[in-house]
Image 1 (tube, rainbow, N blue to C red):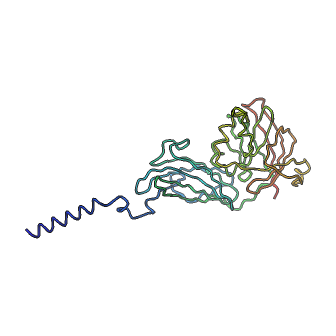
Image 2 (image 1 turned 30 degrees about the horizontal axis):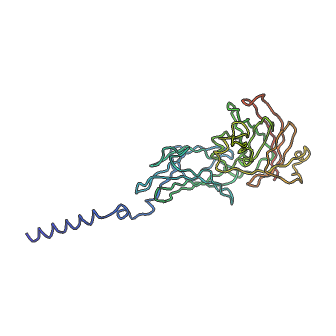
Image 3 (image 1 turned 180 degrees about the vertical axis):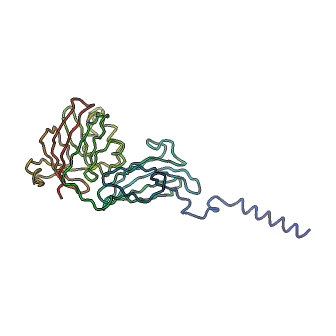
Length: 307
């Protein structure tokens, strides 16, 4: 009988000790508590992507709660190219693009492959402030040098039927439509629009005209760009200067100072020098302008990269 009482007492004490434990006491693995981020290409988890320079590679990014099941509150995407880091997205869950995602979120993301190696970090933060992340490297196949000359087609802001977009990257030598431009903002060097006042314009995304409002607070910038430009987490301040045809032909940068201003009222034959935030320099020449209204306007540039 005495042995039975001792056994019963032991079980009672053990039960009391067990029920007094918290979730934090039971899970003594801080790393397991952090959110988990996985990047998959064609259904397979990856830590690196290699493709042709200028190619866009689709991946699926999944953000999951950690072991303690604390809901996610924020996600962040940042890219590092050389010594510069760009925040592509920093969003609170249940708002905007991530509407309704808190236990987990899965999103398609198109990775732009530049002409140099870069890294992309995908990060999630839960309600306890724990941070989980994964970083992938992105690079071109083999050794790539900047093309000395290339042709660029840019569609106007209301031209939604074109196969190319209105945003251009010197690094990737590629035009982007809005969705891909937003998620690869670190590469977007300039945008084309056709304004009622400014006519054909090549502009840096940092141009204040995209946020211009009147005295009543109404947006009065280029048509259809009010809600577009505000989607970008980073707005590159590409600098421009007027250049001559001889400077374009000879690949010689002009002596004039370059400034991050829109180049307005462009016509066929006009040349503009540029310098991107990633350091690429060059001159573009307008070789063709087509379309008669906002739905079909486009511009064709010859871009010469100057090493």
